[in-house]
Image (tube, rainbow, N blue to C red):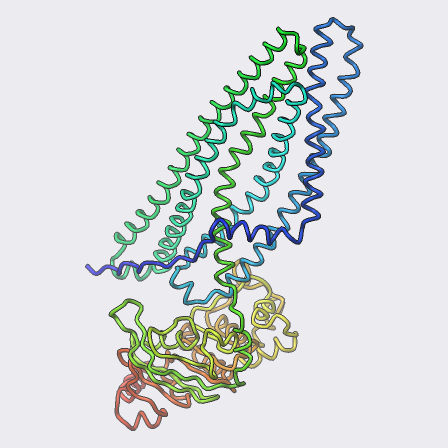
Length: 592
């Protein structure tokens, strides 16, 4: 039984170091200093007001102990109500300010991430696999968002409560403070142990999840091929293996959290017992009243919530930090190098494309291209033909800049494809219709395009008629959840985007292959009109495309076997003549 080959080792997108992650956070916060300071001040006021509760309760205890009349309890009771209302209002305002700050910074981070992700070199994405970027776009962004919405406000509130409560304990009687601090060594050791252990664990879990998603996407996306090669068992085994690795890491995280909680309980009982013993000794010695000792015990008990919240949120913080580091890694790696735009601006309106001595291998020792030399003259349309596996698509992707050749060079108007910016555009047979109005889908190629320019692009590829005939014309929602377009109409849409983008060099990789025989002629005419005035390289699915090209290049086993016009190659009697004869016979046999 033939099985699908094992996938090559992936080169994951980078993850930022902790230092770089926090530097990026500071960069994002720098423009928002005023809201940050304002939110912190309001939270300080809210916490300070709340700390009046324990002394008031202690005062009530003293009044009861001294057998004061019931009327003496009225004032402290009213004050307790006022404290609760004041703390509630101030806390709501402070949490709102902190949350708004977090959402603003998160929005800026998302925008930077999406901008950089869209500008990632396609070669880099192919090496990493779609699962890695997909897990960052979905799970990592969601985890950071949860941290900002839930963990950040609570961490701010808990941190202020801890600091101010300890200060209040010292104000009651300084001897309560050392007693309360007996819990700190246990808590500090627990936090340090958890941070040291959880960070790498969550980072591994993110990588394992990305690998799991990559395998799922590869298996589901290639389901037809998997079934054709009877490779279901092999792929199921790979999915199971990667899923088990992700689950094992998740269970390790659960066990880690359970151990974390058990250590926190030890710290709580240690500190509370020390405060109660201290209060007992101070009351017996006459240094403090029962109300003061009660207030101290209540202060320490009120620390259970903030301390546990802060330490427990370390779990969310560690997970969110690991996710944030993966997002920052993409933001950094995808930042365009200085000077790339300048290089693209120097490219001619319809430049020549030179391929010199290009060889390429996806796996070392298995070359796909071998010493390919090819020159596309300005505004020349060259068709690549050959059997499957001849290297046509690989050469096309190298010209576009998706892959960098293992050896040799490619330049577009004197610059490398990677530096040519929007000079080179690629249209493949796998087109995507984005969800939204049809006109907005087209404007992705040129955001500032007017309605007239959009209509001109559709008219040029022969799509304006059916586009205007849609239920709401160019405002009709297409894509997922909207009006479904046929394969040939989706391809026309891609060609219209090409017209709007108006690149000097265009590469079509079997861009008309998805059309049936009824739509083939229409799509080929649309492609011909879209390529007018451009230097073009066309991977021809049908030899009728090759016949219409200025020049035909025949590839065999990664090399150029023939090159010339359609008529010249037919007359030469070589590989192209054989291909043409077989294709023509097939075409005539299909006709009634």
